[in-house]
Length: 280
Ligand SMILES: Nc1ncnc2c1ncn2[C@@H]1O[C@H](COP(=O)(O)OP(=O)(O)OP(=O)(O)O)[C@@H](O)[C@H]1O
Ligand SMILES: [Mg+2]
Image (cartoon, rainbow, N blue to C red; front, side, top):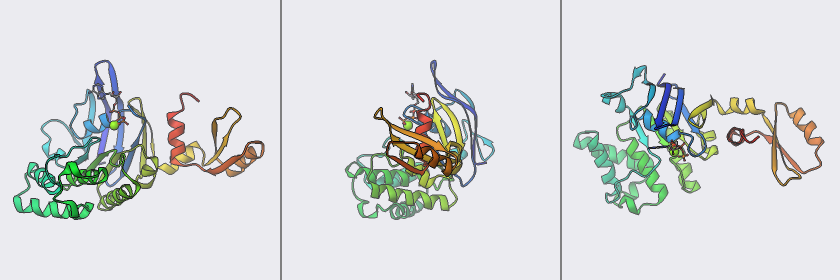
């Protein structure tokens, strides 16, 4: 087990942002953490990387408890935070060199590592540009390169593709797939459900500080019903109904007077149903 939490909890005063989370991520697994704004995703990640102190509960990395003075464990971890963490006035290359220095890499190794990473994320051609002058997509790629500087075993990414165009996003997906193929354990949050569907082995659904489900996208779809009947009802609302079998779905569809779509259930349906379950 690469990452394991036991009853991990974070309180801010009376407010509980993360509430008794038990999470397990296997070595080499790619986990997606999905949940609406304010669910507690960033807070959970900040505890996992040691940036926020847990109010209660435990974190284990490779069976070893993670706590204070565990620099060796923290050295195994790379993080791409939700908000831009670049030194604005430094160039792309300087950002990486500076970060390598913080990790105490010897000088010749710093140059080599920066060079490799510039190639890997496709920023070699803008290496001399100040990071504040990069496009949003380039900044996100540089943040990923930074997170990889110490060749971490575990990579946490908090909304790494927020607000960037499709081409840049797909390029980042390729980067992350490559990291997965290299055997890294990866945890990612995103509001782009298709991103989680494309990348993740497992998906954890989080809301109000708790993780309610954690399973493969396929199993989550099966749980909801593999087939979706979708139609615009007489109250001007789109209705979604889920069925275990195609026959059942067809039968129900046959009774409708409205125009309908009958399709396979997607992870987006699972997420939509999860986040709207209180009003249903
Ligand atoms: N330092 C803090 N002090 C008080 N409350 C906080 C603090 N940090 C986070 N919170 C609260 O904890 C809750 C969870 O926040 P968090 O940033 O973890 O959510 P999130 O799931 O990452 O949301 P988003 O998708 O918007 O990034 C929110 O209600 C937030 O206001
Ligand atoms: Mg967040």
